[in-house]
Length: 155
Image (cartoon, rainbow, N blue to C red; front, side, top):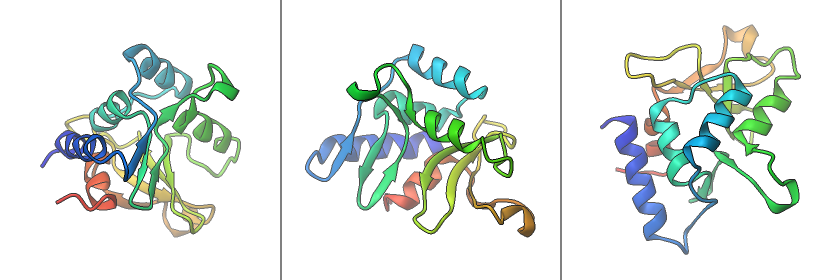
């Protein structure tokens, strides 16, 4: 199953179970392009679909940052955009990583934009301040959709 297909399954599950999942709402193409410009990166197809359909999402004990706004923060793009930009202030954090989740153990789960595959998908990796000493971030999945499938136990 492709990464995009996995995200489609997540979207169906989330929308079909509103008592179990929360999501902020899909982003417009303009907002996605703005998020990419602020991060100086292009999102892979599976993550772009996630953003356009859900924005951000939580359920089953999983919280994917996505991209969203709140009334209190106005037009500021939060989630992946704000967290990535803030974390880039740490010189140890690789600038090609795009944060999608925190693992609860000090790890920052990210899309690695420096390693696109033939379909334009990025691997999902986990980074922490000691990652460089271990040879770099640990690879968790080949793409965002595969990661989502595992995290939300979609079979």
